[in-house]
Length: 602
Image (cartoon, rainbow, N blue to C red; front, side, top):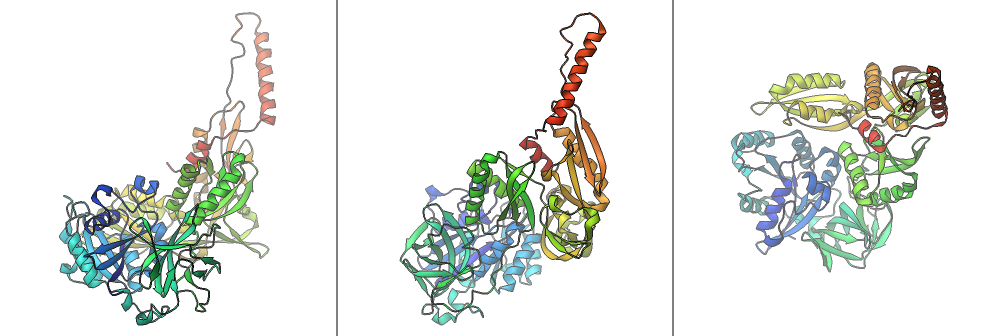
C-alpha cells in the first residue's frame, strides 16, 4: 500500500486537464504510442466534440515498475462540481492546474476550497508554458499568493510537448501521501485497513446493457473479490460482485481489490436509482453508517421534455431511465399538457447539464423532442395559507391567488480583467444582482462577489458575461437560501390557447418588455397558417402584447378576365367564409424548431 498514490487533476474549464492526462499516460507507458490520441480519457462523443470532460474517468498507471498511480480526471464545469467533490474524497492529493495564458479563475478557487477542506496535498502546476501567450512568471506569483507558498514550489508543464511531465511525476511520488497515511473520523485506522471489513466509496458509475451498473470505487478498508455478497448502504440494495478490476484505461479484471486501490465492481443491477455517487459499498455484515459526506445532488434547473410525436412517449420514458442509470443527478417525473400531450418534467444540475442530456436523447436514442423554457423551483404561499412547491411555469398560480413567492438565490464569484468591470456592472444590475466585496486579483484583474436570484443567473447571465468580456471573465456560484420574489407568470397565447412550453416566470418590473419580446420573436419564427392567428402575451389577468399573423391567401379570381365585379366579390366572400370556418375548426401547427428557437436566446 505504501507504493500507491491516489490523486486527481482539478482545474477550471479548458485549462488542459485532459491534455496533461494524455501526457502522463504516454510518459508512464500506460497507453502505447500507436494507440495515443487526443483526450484518451474522454470516451463520450460529445466530450471529444466539445473538448470538455463531462464524465470523470479513472486510470491506473505504473511508474518506474514500482509505484501505482491512480488518477481521476474530473470535469471542470461548475454544473459538475458535485462529481468533483466526490472524486476528491477518493484521493489523497490533487494537482491544481492553472493555464499560463489565463491565470487563476473563479472555478479554480471553488475547487481548491473543496480540496483544502478535505486536507488533500496540493501540487500547484502551471500548464501551457509553451504557448506564445503564456505569462508563466506572473501566474506563478498569483498561485503562490493564493496557496501562500513559495513561487519555486509551483511547477511548469506543457501537456502539448510533454515538457515538465517527468518532473511532475517525481513530485507526485514524493509529496502525495500513500493511502496508509490517510486518517479520518469516518474511516477505519490506516494500519489495519486490509484486515478490516470492506468499506468503499462510489465516486462514479456507468451502465452496460450486458453487465448492468458498474460502480467506480475507492477501497477505504478491507478487500473485495468476485462473488462477494455486497450492499449499497444508502439505497439498501444487495448484490453479488460479478467482476472486480482496474482501469488501464480500459477495464481489466483482477482477482481482488484491496484497501487504498481504485477500481470497479460489476453489480449486474439493471434498475435506475440504486447506485449513486457518494454511496458506500460494504459487506452484508457491516453495521457502520455510510462513509461521511454523502449528499443527494439537488436539481437547480427544471425543464419539460415532450416527444414530438406521442408515439415516441414510451421510447422517451425508456431513454430517460437508461440515462439515469449512468447519471444519478438526473431526475424526471411524468406530466401532461393539453397541447403537447404527455412528457416528463426533468431536473438538471445546470444549463450545461440540460444541454448535454437533451443532446444525448437526440443522438443516442434518435428522439425528436420539444423542450420547454428552463425554470427553477419556487415556493408559493397562497392567500388561504397553503404553501406549494412549483417546478413548472404552467403550474404557477394566478397573481390574485398569491400572498408571497420565495425563490432561491446564488452567491457568485466573478473574476475579470479590470477594464471590463464597468460594462459587467451594467449586466449585473440588469439581472437584479447585488454587488458585495471586490478585491484586486493579480496585476490587472478584479474579483467581485455578487448575490443574485437563481432565476436571473439562468437567464443567459453566463453568455452575456463571456460575450461582454471576450471570454476573459470567469465565474462560479453556490446556492443560498430562499428569499422573497416579485415574479409573475407570463403566458403566450396562440389563437387563444396558452402554449405551456412558452410559459415563463418573469420579474414584475420586466413583464412588459418580456411579453413584447416573446410575442415579437414568435411572430417572426411561426410559419403562416391557412387562417389568421393572434399571438398574445398574457400576465396578471390582462393582455400586455399582441400581434396578428396573416393567413395564406390564394387569388381566387385569377382565372377571370373581365365580366361584372360582383362575380369577383362573390368568390372573395366565399373565401372569407371558408377562412372563418377554418379558424373555428382548425388547430395551429407549431413545428419543433419553433419551440427550440423560442427556448434559445438570440
